[in-house]
Length: 343
Image (cartoon, rainbow, N blue to C red; front, side, top):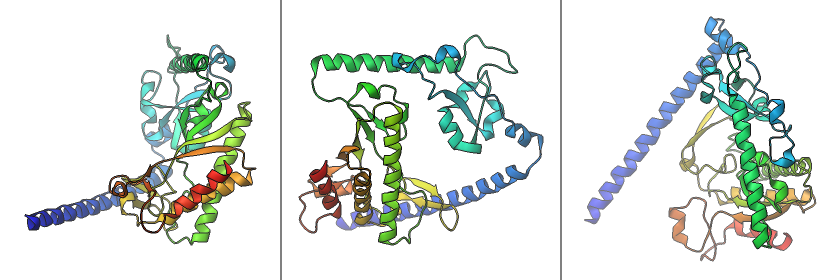
């Protein structure tokens, strides 16, 4: 029986290895084809390419939708636009705007040539009965009003501090931070942008601290812009897998990503990254140092994902940090203890 189980396990491992190799080849070929088409599109002069390059109208909020933010409505600082990827730009217009993607003006600028703004109020200047952009902004206003009322109702029966956890790429769109006591963020911020497996520990440590400095400076500026400079930040979720390169896309524990590298685009399968308990410890050290460099008052605390006292959890939870285990202590614990003395 034991022999049969071993054979079955070997077959499963072989199958998994073959599948991963097949996917590697597939996506390597896909990336080369994608790059080839992109080069072709950049140099082509056909009618289709020219049509894709046309800049459509910018979808701007109307005066009626620019109400005072104190009422919970959309403010001047974050108008919404509708974008379309260039490859489908000619199919997205006033009648089929839902195929597009909603974003802020700031996001649209950051995306550059990857997307283009599309007309949402009609074709060739024709007005539709209902502007979809106005409908989006109306929904946002109702949501913000609902949350403000809910927060005030909770305060009537609860005397403690209140917050709301937003994802690291969404906190700027929350419209009721002024009603809360803390800015809470699920903080899976990318701390570096490219695949560099040959970095020394000192170089990696410097990169990670610089990444956190940029993140915290943006948070500090955001609080001032929103008129809540005394609010502190709680990282309501923060964690890393115990593998190399975990600070590039901290949310990624499975699957793959195509990352820039010194040798060109690199397909990275996250489960195949070698074990490395040092990188995530350096990330926490970088956070502590960056917070102290800004005065030590911005960060109010960390809720680390995921603590456990059961060593077997390492087999099922790639983010786990086991505490109280026999043997050498994980270096992450020492870095986290520094926060308990300061925050």
